Image 1 (tube, rainbow over the protein chains, first blue to last red):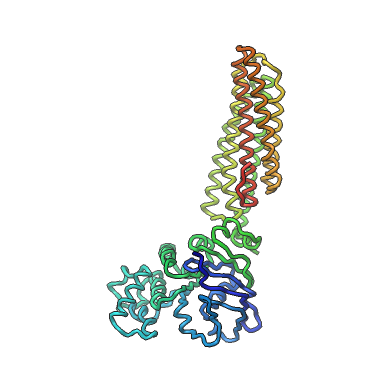
Image 2: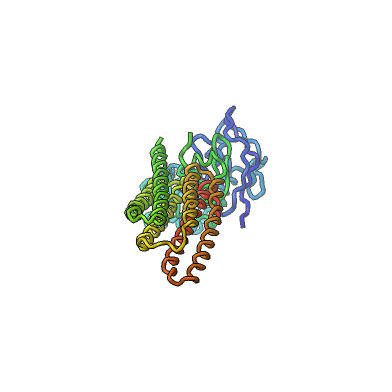
Length: 252
Length: 216
């Protein structure tokens, strides 16, 4: 049941001379939600971005160690980063729809990957919007600008956009930090449903959110992963003093 | 840091439990003394004090719910707050049992004892000591001490068995002793139940400290 989707082995990561991740090893389980928690600057977002090589875009970065996705090393020579990112989608903190129509936002990815058939695109757009629990709210105005819908809707649109290229994994970097509680609840419920088809890794600053939505939680501190395990255990009975101090707010 | 208020509230809750504990200990002591010395005034005192314990329990309960609602505690904080609410209930029930003993003092209304009371005061002493130590283990978050105290309940159970057996002998020999013997049996059983509640408290202390569910 607990199939390893991503295996991270002895991962080190550097921004020039600064070592941002120190010897991280963990297995991310398929079709589960894994939450990454820790104080600002602990490396959790850096870690998240190593999973689809988003850090490659930053100059002066260096990676050591292995990240195996379905057993294949994503940092191996010859890996097509575009293909990788198709397989490992990402949603960011601030909703960032393209300044295009709702339809075009979702169709953008499939088009970029060579799908041109109009019926096929329509179908993908509808399915993606349905999966992102947004279809009913926007189906009558697909041609309107994506910038005209609410922040919560924009964020779900970004999720739909990510889903449109059929990824296996969805990375989410504080996806609800800019949203109100109702929009947050919708995204959280959505994640709960998406788990059936996707493996989700989420960075969150809200401990309660991690507790509510995730199956596994990893606690990062100063570039190290201090503790990783089932969320229930981490929040009821953390093994490490540092984890306990952090989740109970006695940090620092 | 925001959490300093939370720490203060938690510390106050600890103090509330200690206060309840010392009230219970006193109630047990006074109740059994009132019985042995047939002191109705003392019995009245115990019965009056019981209201105070009931109110304390409610107060602790409210504070726990409030802290959970406002602070969303996790890990040991959550275990501690959850268990404090339950420990308060145990203590309140122990107070009720002391009340029952005081009531029996009054029901016996000064009649002569069918036998000298030796084991009942002994049992009461052990139980009072256990209350004290259980609360000590609670404040110090000392799971080892909690385990030790929890296991002492066997002594109380043995004394209870012994007292009941002895009283039965008296009652079989002399049917006029049945009425009083029956009441004294109740006293013994009340003390035994107090012991059970102390055991519960000890189990909760172990859970707070280790997150392990144990039964003694």
